[in-house]
Length: 368
Image (cartoon, rainbow, N blue to C red; front, side):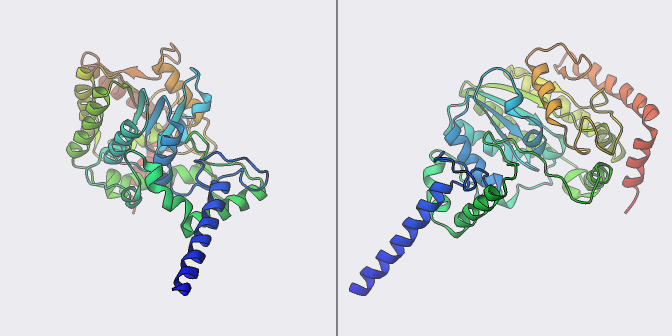
C-alpha cells in the first residue's frame, strides 16, 4: 500500500510539474502568463486545426474570419480599421465541410457577432475530405476545459513548450500571430516563379483540387447549413470569393471547369441572397489579379495566396470603399449574369496581355 501511495504521489508530482511548465511557457498561446524574454515570447503552437478552436474561445472575438489558407495568410486583423476584436480562423486547405464545423464551433463557444467567410472554388470539391487533424480538433462548448489534459499534461505539450523556449532564445519573429493570422514562411532555394508554377501543377493535377472535380452538392449543403445556423443566432454574415492570381483562374478554364465555376457562383448567390447575406467576388481578371506571374509578385505570394495588403483592400471594399473600382463586385441575382459575361471578356484581354503566363498554364496542364 505504501508503494502504491508513493507511486501515485510521484506520478501526480510529475504531472503537476509538467502542467506548471506548460502553463508558464504557454506554447499554444492560451493563458497569457507573464512574458519572459528569451523564454516564452515566441510561441510554437503546432497544428492550427488543434489550437485555433481553443484560441477563439479564449479570445472571444466580435468578428471571426473563416476560410482556407487564403484567409489565414491574406487577412491580417491588425491591418483592419474599425476597432473590433477580430480573430482569423482561416485554415490551410480547409474544405467546405471543415469551414462549416469551425463556424458552428464559433457559434457555440464564443459570443461573436459577425462572420466574414472567404470562399474558394477548390474547397467545394466533393471529392476532397477533411484533413485527418480535423477529427482531432476539440470543437463545441468549453473546448479549452475539455482539452486541458492535452494542453497541460502530455508529452506533445512539453515538446511544444521546448520548441517555444528554443524559438524565444533565437529571437525569431513569430509566424503565427496572437489573432490567428500567420505569415507564409519562405521556401529556401525556391523563387516566386518556381513556387507559383508548383501551385499551378498541384491544382491542375491533384484529383481533390481540379484534377477531378465533378460535384459541389454535398459541400454546398454544408455551407448553406452554416449560413442558416449563423443567421438563426442573429450573426451578421459577409462572404467573399478570394482574389486568387489570374493564372490559377485560367487553370480552371484549361481544366474544363469553367461552366462549373460559373454555376458555383450562381448557386452561392441563390443561397446567400434570400438570407440577406452579401456576396462579393474579387476573383477573375482585374488589376490586382493579373500582375505578371513569377518572381517577387507585388500582389501575390504565389498563384494561390494574395498578400495582406490586398486582403486589406478586400475588407475595405466590403465595408464600402469606392476604390479600386474594378476590384470586387457584389453579386446578386440581378447582376450575376452580367458579371460572369464581363469576366469572360476580361479573360480574353488577359490572354492577349499575358500570353506567356497563359502558355505556362497550358504547358503545365498537358504535362506530366
